[in-house]
Amino acid sequence: MKTYIIGNWKMNFTVGEASLFLHKLLQKVHSYRDIEVVVAPSLVALQSLSLQTDRRKIKLAAQNFYHRDFGAYTGEVSIAQLRSLVDYVIVGHSERRYIFHETDKDIRAKVAASLRDGLTPILCIGETESERTFGETADVLRDQLLGGLQDVSAEDLSKVIIAYEPVWAISGHGKAAKVASPLDVKDAFTLIRKILKETYGKDTASETSLLFGGSVKSINAESYLRLVDCNGLLIGGASLIAPEFTDIIEIAKRVKDDRA
Ligand code: PGA
Image (tube, rainbow, N blue to C red; front, side):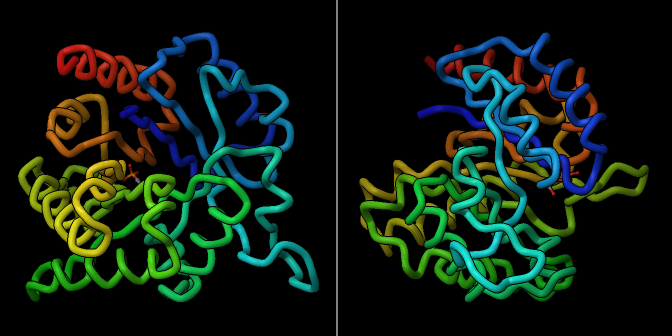
């Protein structure tokens, strides 16, 4: 299985800045067969970056889209419109769930739409700080996982990537920031695999890629990548700093080689 290093640029960079940044990355990133590097720029930059990028080195993801293909949906962008520009789509990110009130029903429709149109959905799930405090983590992960996957067949499950992103550990870049320990992540991965196994069977579940996201930087990336169940990282803040992002790619390659 490949290791995924995915940078979520969120609402950062103008189109010009995004292009310059991608140019910098393309100069530094090596193309490795077993490491898949993906960045998710703002929607407005996707068209030009899709022409600029070298897909052998860096593929593109969309941060958001609407599940219908065409029609009277002012302000929305569909998978059909994105299909020639990106290979991946992020679905169910906590910022979409909590700031833009996306529900599991919306998320399920997006997962199904992306599979229908041949793009790989990166389904994000994760508990908030209060859910964790009240001991609800397992229930939340189960609800979000099965909620998002409800219309996904066993055959299609291998085309879905799951990202565990505890909401309390996202954007933790200040001094008092909370960071998930590798043990926290391991527990969540074990639970996610267990739910997938119960739902889809052992073989199918073991083929699903699990990523971690939440304040990943070059100093802690290795501790997550070394987890047996970890197939990669979803990186926000640190993906906006070229040396950080490229260091994490090299760390992923080293861990992969050690495992081979
Ligand atoms: P962060 O963001 O790395 O800045 O915590 C991760 C994410 O939101 O995907």
